[in-house]
Amino acid sequence: MSSIKRTLKTFVGVFDNVVESIGSYMMAVMVIIVFCQVFSRYVLRNTPAWSEEVALLFMTAYGFLSIATGIGRKVHLSITVLYDHFPSPVQKALNILSDVLSVLFGLFLMIEGYKFTVLTWSSQLPATGLPNGVQYMVIPFTGLVIVVDRLLGPFLDEGGKV
Image 1: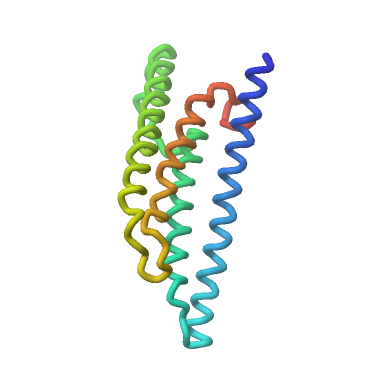
Image 2: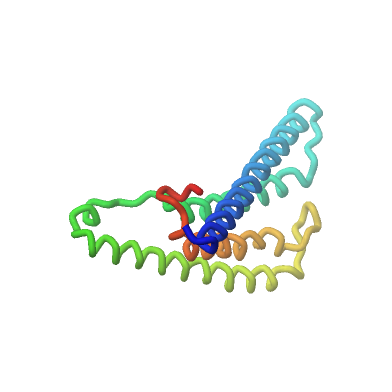
């Protein structure tokens, strides 16, 4: 294996691990916030105003990161009834088409997600006062993860693991 391939393989592996770690921490924080929210509501009879909004921000971001991870590892649900009956060259062509469409989708998310984040930055979320664009920042990041994984994915071993 050439040193460039090894470097790209290492980069993609570290990149994917960082994205998954971010998602794991987001899920943990979200669970803690929801637990505190429920405890505050039913035991203390006083729910923090920000808790639902922040939990929703984390849930949305986690969902988008999960999309990116699934596309990157090619583990999203697919129906292969017809695909399995095609000859190997057609399957390879369909795999390439799938990668190209995934990269285009990632680029779309990067460009349009950035535009939408900037467009909504001037308004505020009601409970936290954060810029409204905060909830959309994950969209261009998701696009970036998809593009990196699909462009550099061929350097990974089978199954998407480093």
